[in-house]
Amino acid sequence: MEKSRRGMTQYYKDMGFKKFFVISLCLFLFPVLLLQILFIRTSISSMNEQVNEQVYNNLKQVSEKFTLLLESYKDTVWQIYSDKDIIRNLEQYHEADDKTQENLSYLLNEKLERFVESKKGIRNISLIFTTGEGIIYDDQSDSAQDNLWRGYDDLCQIPPYQQTKNKNEIVLIPTINFSDGDKKESMFFLGKELYNTENLRQGVLATLIIGVDEQELQNICNGSTGLNTPNVNFISDRYGTILSFPDEEQIGIVLDGWEDELKFIGGLNMFEGGNLFCSYYRDWKTGWIFHNVYDRDYIMHDINMMQFIFWMLFVADILVIFLFTSFINRYYVNYLNQIIEAIRQINQGNMDVRLVVDRRDELGQIGENFNYMVDRVKSLIEEVTEISRKKIQAEIKALESQINPHFLYNTLDAINWMAIRRDEIEISKMISNLGMILRYCMNQSNEMAGISEMEEWLKAYVSLYQLRYGNSFEFEIYVEPEVREVRVYKFLVQPMVENAIIHGLKDLEGGLLRVDIGFAEQPERIHVIVEDNGAGMEPEEVEFYNRRDAEWSRSEQIGLANIFERIQLYYGEEGEWHISSVKGLGTVMELLLPVRDMGKNIQEKVME
Image (cartoon, rainbow, N blue to C red; front, side, top):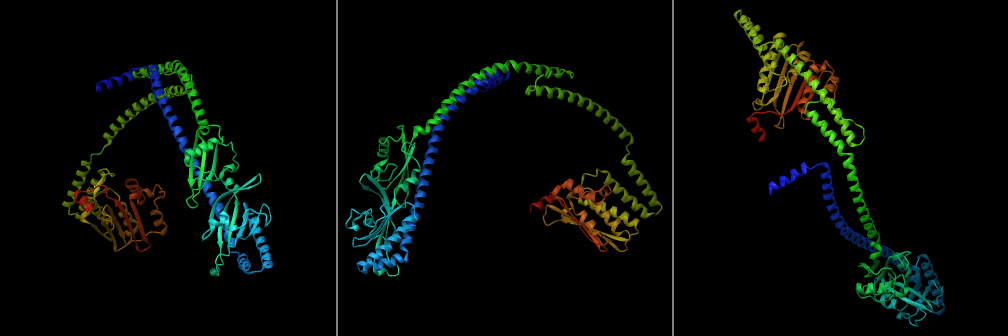
């Protein structure tokens, strides 16, 4: 199996560009066809999901609009309920004589008229008494006698009153159809029993019935949608009775399930197609159900057309691709063969070969870059040859001028013995310390050294300055035993010590220079303190040297600035320094360095 796989891989590697392009194209077309089939299925499924989601959201919005509409009418009910004049007039009405009742009826009718005019959609407001009488304002007839309930001798028998009776809350009464000759009307109602909240013993003063035009429901359901639209919204109660429909003739019809609903809608010939689909959304507060029916074929028409166009374009693309393949074979393969031939000559050592660039496409750019690369390689070969020649000459000169360190150490040792024989002990000590300093310095200044080694070197280094200045200052150094094995970069502390001596202590009698080296609060960091009681520094200098972004001059780079620049180079943001100084009292210089190289004992301490 493995051998067969390797053979197939090698077969593809060995085939020509033309053959490879044709096979690759065929391998490309097969998954494209497969993906197209999957795309069709996925598109239809996704479209159905999106349509269903959109329909559901639309129905939810309709329900929310209905809730707002209902709340606005409920607000009117509460306004009437809380109107003290209406309540007072109702109290007086029951005990008044006929003439007073007539006046009170007129006043109440005016009040009801104002409420009808204040809210769009209200067609009728009725105050019905338990005696079967009532005070009614009808917006259509504008008459107290000729009103919606003229067919009832006892108003206590009207359906809204019966459904509101003995209910403490505001009652929503479903849509009722009314006929007046050839004219048909549909209204839904809100009912509420009225009490005097300050004297509930009086019982029900009247039952308030507000009739609202069913067209208000249509406005929030379908807006301006006509009977020939591709979808329709309508409302039913929990029992399937239609409460609102674009065709008022259908209000009151009872539907038994979605199959009955689709059959009912299909029989109205509202849609051109017959592939109908229905969705629902229930308002749990009122129990009313909001329906949507749409023609699935109408909605999917565009996507079916897009799929047909896609297939036509796909077939056309295949034809274009095959034509383009033939063009590529003639236009590109020849130039690729020229590039391959030029590369072969380069491999044979011919650095003078160049491609003729007569095109500005990608292959032309390859030709230009190939020519540039050959020129550059040729130039680099010449440069490397020249650099190698100069390097060899420089190494020869360096060997010729090199001073043997052993010769220098042996010479200092001979001078030291001459001083001892002549009892020049101070001179002998200075020569010994100088030899130690030279050995430390000449062993690659940028390498790392142990702190114990640096301690001995500092002692020897400071002793030379003490002899030079007649022991005018004292030197103390303390190194914690735990840090002696830690290795740090050379010459980070020496310039600080030298600065303290030259600029702080050289002209001072009784001076003190102290160096403390140990772990900081975090065991993985070294804390170095160089302190003197010398002349101190100016505040401007302290501020300048404490800045990480300071630009050092050439002269400053030899001293403190050299330390700080090297700390940033070696340790980055982990390396820190700080200078504190008071003019005339002394200076404290601190370094915080991360531990980069440590012995086994230090590693165990850090792990603790």
